[in-house]
Image (tube, rainbow over all chains, first blue to last red; front, side):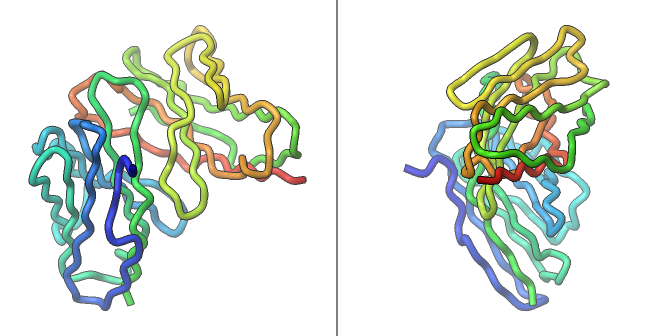
Amino acid sequence: DTAVSQTPKYLVTQMGNDKSIKCEQNLGHDTMYWYKQDSKKFLKIMFSYNNKELIINETVPNRFSPKSPDKAHLNLHINSLELGDSAVYFCASSQVGLTYGYTFGSGTRLTVV
Amino acid sequence: LAKTTQPISMDSYEGQEVNITCSHNNIATNDYITWYQQFPSQGPRFIIQGYKTKVTNEVASLFIPADRKSSTLSLPRVSLSDTAVYYCLVGDMGNTGRRALTFGSGTRLQVQP
């Protein structure tokens, strides 16, 4: 039973398109995150939601819009995709006060052509 | 946020003990030290977390000196399947989630037969 699941696993799309990535966690965690891993393998935080409230919004183009319908889901919508958006996007969750860290999904590899 | 410094890469052989040291000179009082492992095409996976002294679980040990300005992840008797990137992170896990974990460049461990 997957703890943090992302869909789709692979996404190939053309420049200018709009796409969404979905994330769901069944751990009962109250905080969810989106991270971006580029070709150089650096993992960078993009957004963080705590109980459906946006609490971290790093320097990310406003073409990226996270949406959290409930605390178990955090989706990422990307408008007007650009070549530089190609990366692996990871969703993660954690529970404030617990010390065992984050649980990551398996990632969505986005390729913009 | 505390910045971490760790070796870019390490090589080892099966059956050997591997120690990866991470420097975090400006660690804050409330910060925990957490290590993650990432295999290709997968999300990072929690390995171990500690605050001070020594922590051991079924996978690894974590040694933290009294000043907490560094930490060492110890992997006993590595196997080929331990080939991965290992990330050292420092962060406050007990807050409201307003500070997300920041990943550095990690240490790429290559285990040879």
